[in-house]
Image (cartoon, rainbow, N blue to C red; front, side, top):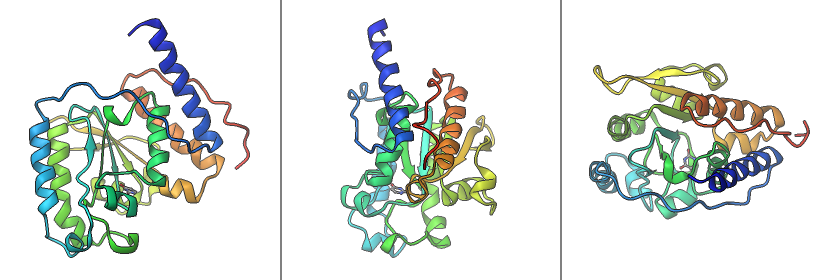
Length: 242
Ligand code: URA
């Protein structure tokens, strides 16, 4: 990468971080992803199984299943709760308002959506965005586990209580889990991933205080450090107003 490209990446990262703190929700785009990788086929096979899955009732009420999307070589995976209305219509994860905030967070970390993988615990939308039922998690989790086993990311960010508790098999509150790395085991043999729980972007939108944004941003900075990526410069934060 040339010095000029480096500078423009750093500048965009800084602008996104500033706007994350300042509350500007304009979407920014990023150049297209690099070429397809060999792992695509195995990931696409899982996605095809998800698209025809009818194990739960919500398999019949969905418009589209949302298997997840991103780079099959991703070092970083974001796992949310379940598709919402916009995701159900488009068949893509995190494309609604919470998704726009997640996208801004990813950009502020110096990454693009095409460099990470984004998915959910449930692949179908629960009606009226209700909480996932235990039997739905039970039915759907094998798809996510297979995706994670194939991806073997170095870091997983669990967005919100449902993702964190499911992946860590705990009942602890998200406030107790977030802010530090836990281990996620793909299998007996493979080295575990580091798992960072943080607040769900939808929670952040509902509770858009400076302190909550700071907490999430601090969690994401730890992820950036863990991945050995350039740490975004400290933000002015637009003052400490909510
Ligand atoms: N919330 C989620 O948890 N997942 C999505 O894909 C969108 C909103």
